[in-house]
Image 1: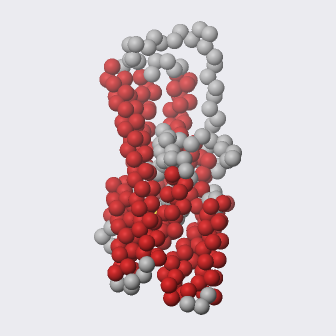
Image 2 (image 1 turned 45 degrees about the vertical axis):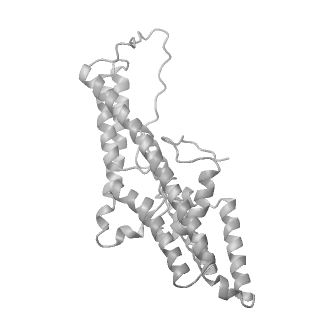
Image 3 (image 1 turned 45 degrees about the horizontal axis):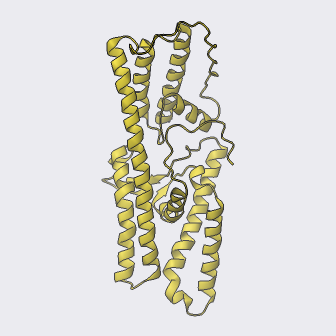
Length: 293
């Protein structure tokens, strides 16, 4: 069981068992398409270690067994390449983690297609990245399957790539669906903040507390941006109510909405407002520096 010191922010794009299976099927293709993964995204779960070991044993069998290479060369090459790339990306992510420059847990890499002339404009554009991850990459996997089947008359890898392409699309669709849900919740927060700003008061249905019998508010520890990079990123994202992937544009929008809601909140003392405003400012400054760096 993971000893999580900081709770995850926002809904997590996972369905028990289903997400793990989709992740296992999609990663052998994802390591070909993308670079710069987060460590937890590539963390060596037992199923991946078993997959890597099985792939290497299968490659050894195909290489040594007489006549096997003729039938399984494509499947064996795909598995071996996936294992090598997976180990490479995992090593890079581990080094980044030890240097405290690692990305957050749900970071699933930057697509190589974003480096292609004409598609570079989609870099940092959420809509462009969704199109590439949700439609273009699965379509390329299915196209490769068709080419292997029709032109090279290859059966085994072509059939496997169909399964991988479907799993990749389902995995990205699940992430996209959770993003839509989270965006809707954020819009509701912003609407509530705007209504409170326009009225200048808290909701009339809620009676402002008098403070009698109220327990003292626990002070939030002071935040600094010179500590653990990964821990600070999750802390600041929690303060700004962000969900991965963290983007400066969303951080700025949340900062404006939360500061406006804080300004008209009559249930907080001036000292509490000052502390919370200081935390919000430190959080948005962190993401500004991260964007520039």
